[in-house]
View 1 (cartoon, rainbow, N blue to C red):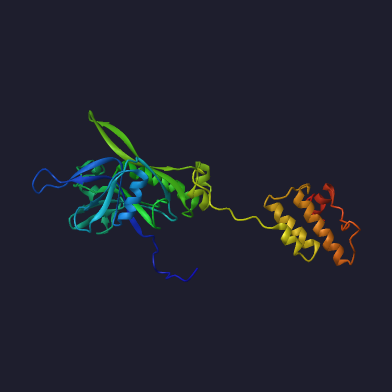
View 2 (tube, rainbow, N blue to C red):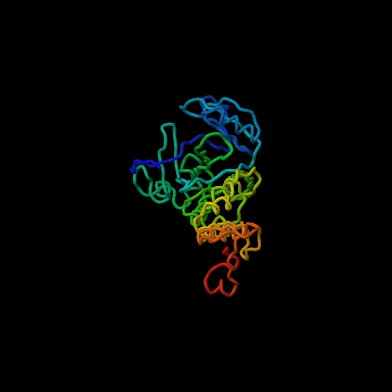
Length: 335
């Protein structure tokens, strides 16, 4: 690998966003756009072919789309998928703050204790007390969670950002990601599903229905996900449902043995085959017998011996199990 600028914070390019709703113009003149919650994922991007690929996977019709406020025109598709498969990239892909925005940008960004822009203690708590989050939307900050994921079956290399302002998702995403990171230490890829789950809450005699984005470990058990980084091949295909990558060809043990100079070199070839599971430890398989014959021939040739009338060389006797155990050599190791 080439050199890198050590002071730069390297990060993957954002390819688009994963959204759980959209907005429609207000019925009142000059009013704010009205949010619409979606039961399925909404995929948006500046690149039309990214969104077309998403529509091909999860359904829906690609359309031009103008984000709220200033910004270039984008493309979006309201898919038919309530759940999509993704990968958590290496590092910590989750960012969470209590935030307040207006047309001028982000006014407040708080970690729950300190407001990051003014470096003052939490402004919402100071103004409204410990239960500040019960105030109407727009009056206080909203819990904002941003999760970067890889969509392995869409074009290009980069991340897609899923964002939610749900209080419940903020708690659950943080808990799930912290458990996973405690096992992987932020190394390797982790297969997950992002699922929009309908929920309801009853308070003060009123029932409120709302969606929550759930991050679920996909295709592996908690034991596998928490015991260290997963092999990349497992993370990309945890269920084995996709065509397997081409396997590396097995070594040509016979060719390697034929090119050996000593019988000990042939034994090394046999040991490699044993580690790869290609020979039996007791030497009863055909490959072990062929390697034994090659070792015997090389030993005889080095000693100046000639083959018998059948073209065979006298093979050394393989150690028995007791001798092998004492010498640390496998019982079936080639002579």
